[in-house]
Image (cartoon, rainbow, N blue to C red; front, side):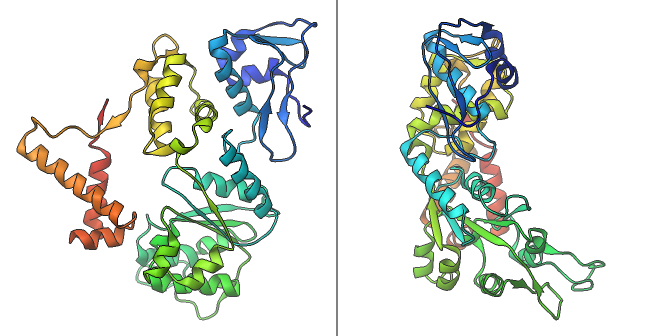
Length: 387
C-alpha cells in the first residue's frame, strides 16, 4: 500500500508520545519498511505493519513493542499522523460517513448533522469545512441551546448602535463574522419559530437584517446545522418549520452512538490520548475495561474518563483500576432529602427523554421555567458519583 505523505518515525515518535520515543532503536535493514501516511488530502489514515512486534519505518529506525502493546502503539502513530480535522475512527460506518462528508464538502449546499449528544457532530462539521473551498476562511460556531432566544437574534445577525438600551456600538453578528466561511448552528432545533423564520430569510436571500437596522446586509456564508433529535418529527409536530428544515437538510448526515461502533473505540482513545497530552501508557486490561463500557455519554464521556485516568495513573501506567466511570447512586439507605433529590433528577431525565432533549418542552412538562430547568440540570451534572 502506498501513501502520499510518509512520515519518519524517529521524529514522529518524539512528537506523538514518550512511550513511542523510548521504543526507538537502531533499525534492521532486513525488515521491509512500514509506511505511515495519508492517502490523499484529508483522507483516512491507514497503518499496515510488516512484522510484529518490531516495526521498521522510513529513516532506518525501528519500534519494538510487546505484542500486547502493539495495537495501541499503532493507533497512537496513526492518530499522530492524521490531520487534526479528520475525525478518528476505523469502523465501516465511520468510513462511510466520512466518504459522504467529503462529497458534500466539495459542494456548497446546506448540511444538517443529526445524532446523539457527544457523538462528534461539531467535529464532522469542521471536517466538512476543511474539505470545502471555504477552508481558508472562518469557521464560526453558535450553540443555539445555550443562548437565550432574546439574545440569539442579535448574536447571529448583529445589532445597530442604539438598537436597545445600553447599546453604544454596533456589533457585526456571527453571520458577518463567518462571511466567506462556514457558520455552525449547533442544536438548531432549539430555536424558536419566530427566529426560525428570520433564519430562513437569511439563508434564502443571503442577507441579514441586524437588530435596529433599516437595510439588510449581504452575506456569503455556508450554514451547517446540528441537532440531537429527529427534526422531521419536530416538523410534523409543528415545532420546526418545514421550509427551514429542507433548506438546511439539503444533505443530511447522521452520527451514531459510540456503543454502536466498537471498532472506533481504540482510534478515538488514541486521538484523545494525544489531545489531552497523557504521558502514561494504558494496559491491556484498561483498554478492555473501556471496550466493555456502554458509553451512554458517547465520546464526551470517554474524554472525561480518560482525563480522570491520567490523574490517577500510577507510575506512568493506566490500569483497569484507574478507569473510573460515573454512575447515579442507589437511593436505598439514603436520607429522605437525598432520596428526594434522586427522584427529582430521575423525573427530569425522564422528561428530557420524553421531550427528545427539547429544554423548552421539558420545562413546560415539568411546570417550571427554563431558567429553573437549566439550574437543576447544572446541579445534576455535578451530583454524579464515581464507580
